[in-house]
Image 1 (cartoon, rainbow over the protein chains, first blue to last red):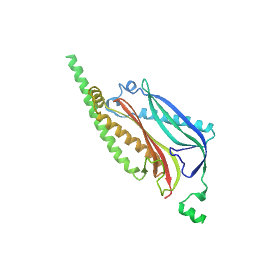
Image 2: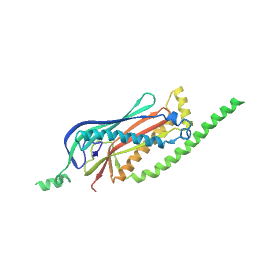
Image 3: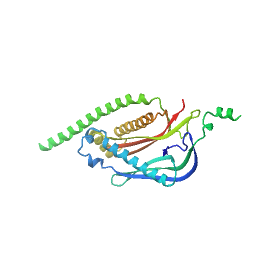
Image 4: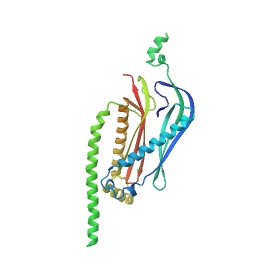
Length: 122
Length: 146
């Protein structure tokens, strides 16, 4: 399934809108508690374990969004947006949403510079 | 006497944290400077449409994410700032670095796809006060006909 955050898909034409699809995950960020005694809290730097956690959470949110799109019979999701919001007690929600569409590959004759198309048509 | 030792230990922890944090920051900045030229050929824009005159072959969502933690020294300074008010410049530096890193990871993802253009770049930031910052950078990587 094609996923883009633009309104159109390069090389493809959107023929039908299926609707808004979404997916979200809630991640508990107990940074202070978990790593309170850890080394990274002392010296700073990237919290690789947390980066992986956030990456997995983002992938899961996108998976849920794509599952909704598949249910609607779409083959692509456009205009994807991510937004985060803080939930009380140190948890954050990642929300992914987009528009599920059916897209077909644009006919070859239409691809190419506008000048070429004018020449072949004329 | 015992109290003095406790205070000395606290100061020592701050100094060790701040020093290690400073070295870690330097090393990260050097690493960023080394990796950025490798993706410099990719055009990056937050425009939603494809630039004129560019023939786009395919598009795909690319994402870069990172979580950076502040060292103990920065946490302490941030905590003081919370009391006194004002701009927490030390934490701003962490956000700047985190954004750079997330953007770089997104571009490395785009490069692996063979793209030379990324459009509609967006940033999402969430932070735990004075403790850690997470940045999510995403866009659509376009392969163009050259």
